Length: 142
Image (cartoon, rainbow, N blue to C red; front, side, top):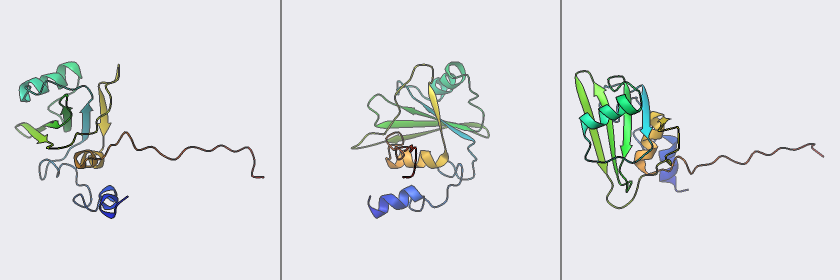
């Protein structure tokens, strides 16, 4: 792994220590990050996305959470959140690559990310390909 990538994973090259909310809106606190697994029609804007959060997910779009959505090609991402007196919609388009995104699973339309994981996702890391070392189970030392 290159040094720059190692520093990004350690949180030093991606804006230093994670300050919740500073990534999207300086001074805004984000309580949770919900990633919506299925691809959406990207013609949806604030009204359609907030209705999806409320009606399909059963979550409160006016709370302190941030909701992530992806298009079919996985090269565009939208983030929706409520800030004091209105919705904020953040949009990112990749020019040459695709976002790593978990497969849509039956029964689980969302997964929850930390702010650090959101930073890694936006930097291009595949959070679902990283696997820990295999668990070894021995019966005896000798």
